[in-house]
Every structure is written in C-alpha cells, then in structure tokens.
Length: 384
Image (cartoon, rainbow, N blue to C red; front, top):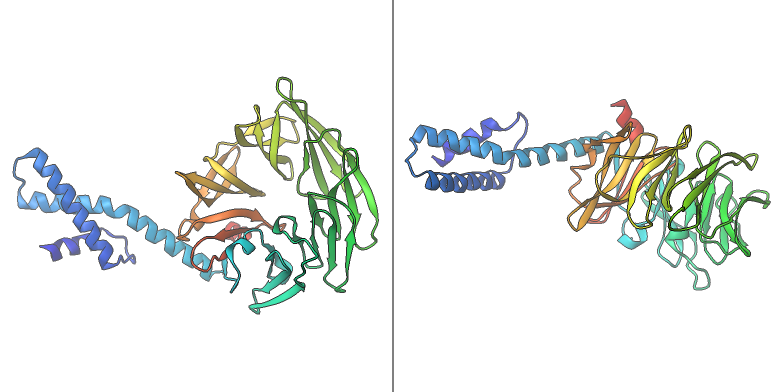
C-alpha cells in the first residue's frame, strides 16, 4: 500500500521534478496523520477507494510548498549557469569584512577592508591583491570606503586618496562623514561653522564649493546623469518640511528646488525623474516613496514591509521582514506597486545589504556557508 501511495505521489509531481525519498516519506507521513485525524472526527468508516483518493489529494496539497521550493532552486541554479547571477566566494575573508565590500565591474573585482588594510579580489583570477598595506597609523572603515577602477578613497578625520594607476597616495585634510566617488571627482561634506558640500577634482586637486548647508540635518543623494540632490530638514514638529536642491555637477548650479511637507527623509536615491527615500511625517514611522521631479509631489509605494532598500531604474531590492528576521527579495516597479521577481527565492540562505552599482548590477551578501556575494545582472533579466 505504501508503495502504491508513493507511486501516486510521483504522478502529482510536475514533469522533470524529482523529490528526495526522505521528502516524499515526510509528505506521505503528514498526509496519513492529517487523514487519520479527519476520519476520527467524522467517525463513519471511509471506503478503501475513497480513502486512497483522499490520501493522494491531501498528499498533493502538502507537496505544493516542496514543489515550489524545488522549482525556485532550479530557477536559481539556471540563472547561475547562464551568469545572470554570479556567486562569488572570497576565500579566507570573514563576513564582517565583506558586508560593505564594493564590486568594481570594469575589473570584475571585489574591494574590501579588514580594518587594517585595503584589498582587491579578482573574480577572474581568484587572486587577492593588497591595495593599501596594513597600518596602525591609518584609520580604515568599510563604511567610508569608496573605490572604482582608478581610485580608492577612505577615512573620516581626513580623506585618504589612492591613485590606482600611478600607485601614489595623498591626504586631503578634511573632516568628513560622507564621501561619494564620482569618476575622477569626490563629493564630500566639509565642516566650518556649518557643513559645506564640496566637489574635489582628483586629477587636478581643485576644490570647488557646491552647497552651503543652512541646517545641520542634511544629506546628499547618489549622482545620476550628472546631477545630485542635496536634502535639508527644516524646523521640527508642526510645520516641519524638507528642502531639496538639485545641482548640475558640471556647472555647479541649481537645476531645480522643491519643498515637501515631511519632517524627515533618509536613505536617498536619485533616479532619472524621481528621488526615492524613506519619508516620515513624525520622525519615527517611515515609508518608502519618491518625490516626483515633474510635479513636486511625494508618492508612497505599495511595497512589503522592509528594513532596507536599493533601487536602479525600475528594479527594487528590499530586505523584506519576516518575523524577527529579513532577507533580500527583488521586485519590478510598475507605477507605485512592486511585482515580485523570484530569481533570488531559491538561494537557500539569508541575503542582506542590497546595493546596485552604476551599471545596474545588484550586489547582496549571503549569510550561508562561506558567506558568498551574489551579483545579479538586471540587464540580462530584461533580455530574458
């Protein structure tokens, strides 16, 4: 009888999908327990034929989650084989050292710091190169690390600059908590009586003022199409608002300004025609939305509860909360809603810290064995 039910279970599975025998036995056992509990409640004895049919039906219902998981794992493995997803394991490097690592696409490399020095790991050659020698006299932090194929930038009490082409280092004596590397320039916040945002040309060493901050609570976005947005929170409580200034970096002139009736915004991302952020009316409850640059209105997105986000074009990566934990899932934005893309569902480990590079590749950290990095090519997703 057990073999008969086992064979019936095989018939309800999709073609080319094979479950391990231990999984099949678990499903059959659960189906038997459920059927026994239901027949005990109903009392009348079921005919053998009906019992067999009911058994197969219950087993078919129970098999659905296993089938879905198996299909998701197969889809993930297919994406890896087609290089839509790269799984990168950096040997002998701990998880904390990789959590804020940088993927430099031009060199297909991972740049990271262990708090003592700065290193590059070539994905093609599977070799590590020391970019900045370990030193007790230099402050290293993954939070302040920026890098591209030409430059490496780090430091807060002073800004350290490494020219990767010449190998020369120099120090910009500026105290800054926020530095963004843009090609051959950096955008950073300097301090006097009030913060000032500067552009610094790394090739000519020319420093240019971009914006005088009028309020202490301010931040700037990523650079998009040669533009950057500076956001300042004005006042507090009733009547609080957020002022937005968008600059053309080449001319260093204001392109557009906006004022929106929110007390606080955070985690800013500038898109082609939107500024994405976490918006709050009371300083504590935040919702993911965007400022429409054409209308000046804020729209709140209809998305799952999340603890972190990253966005590029119409691709949205969310750290979706589930119970006391979360994991990164990928979505496609349509209007103000998000449609799930299930390509990461079959990874089989928790994913954290989503971030996109300038070419639209999503980078996430895995917390499983060997703490891999996953790099998702969203352009290949569009072509599939």
